[in-house]
Image 1 (tube, helix red, strand yellow):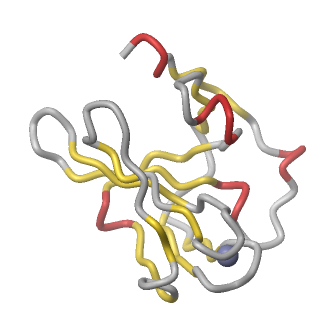
Image 2: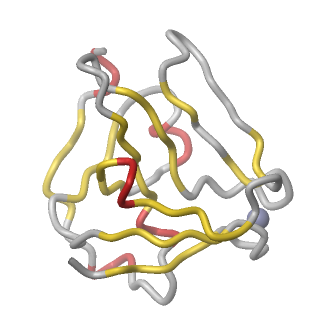
Length: 117
Ligand SMILES: [Zn+2]
């Protein structure tokens, strides 16, 4: 597994994620549709926030099962976290926030139908 580092635009929030950048998805739910994230889903323990634990605002809506954190200064959404029905802890990382990534080279293989949830 490769460790990728990334962060928000202003630099307050930094993270590391252990993941291969395959099986990426976009989502048509009410928040992803507006914020345009390209996401990699990983087990929660593969994501480490290395900076800015106090720099984020948590945002929840609907069933409030997912934490859609965003940087309180620049507004960028680096990752979200949640819990599956069977209790597994997961994170969705916005791969657009990974350092030096060329978003045009990313292959999006899944269109997650969050709108229907
Ligand atoms: Zn920021």
